[in-house]
Image 1 (tube, rainbow, N blue to C red):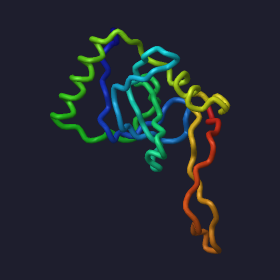
Image 2: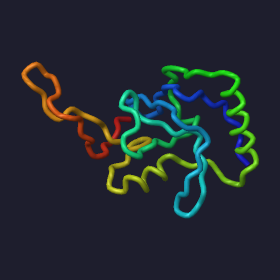
Image 3: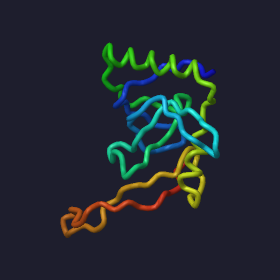
Length: 146
């Protein structure tokens, strides 16, 4: 049985310990299969300001948050949802997952960073004024700075 979590609202922006990029919370109370075993993660997020790129969601837990940059909107519906997620957490037989484990499966050839290897978005080319002349391209996963 897992302990209750004081979940942040959706839309909150955090910095995960060991990362330099901001992450926006887009999901809470996620279950994932890791090597045939179901694990639970407190949050799913995407890079901020890039947003979700493809199908990539960054899995992490409340304890992984190093800094709260912005707290998202919360109302009675959010309070009820957090209560429902916590009721679910305390009733399931699963354990909390380690973000390193799930991300090693997703990026088997990436060098291990402190929390995750993520794709960064960079402009392709720029014109004389420095304006991007093409769409952004996704660069392969990189090691994060500790």
